[in-house]
Length: 137
Image (cartoon, rainbow, N blue to C red; front, side, top):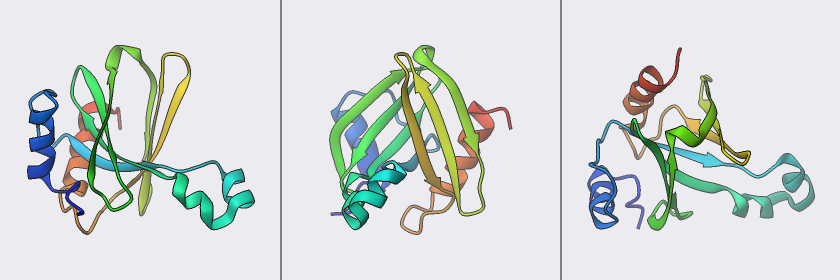
């Protein structure tokens, strides 16, 4: 339980699913929240629609690995080639930042990325590494 934010477990999942070589400084945690109208209509039940992901960047693709509500790893993996990504944006905030990109076919991925995660000390330096490598900041 709660092993999805441990780099050793992430590396094992990469090997198991035959994903690219794992670089521990290229992964961050982020979540996609439901639209505001769902919160207004369903109130607390809309929290169940929050999707949690590990976002892995490399020069060829972005890999999204699904997490459960208890931060356990799942086999739900989405591989998105960099060539099919448009409108890659990052907006730094004080507590949380926003990462967004659009995929071919207008599929939008609007992530909320905390700048610091208590159980994942790697989040802050990895976020800095990814922003300097993939975004013109």
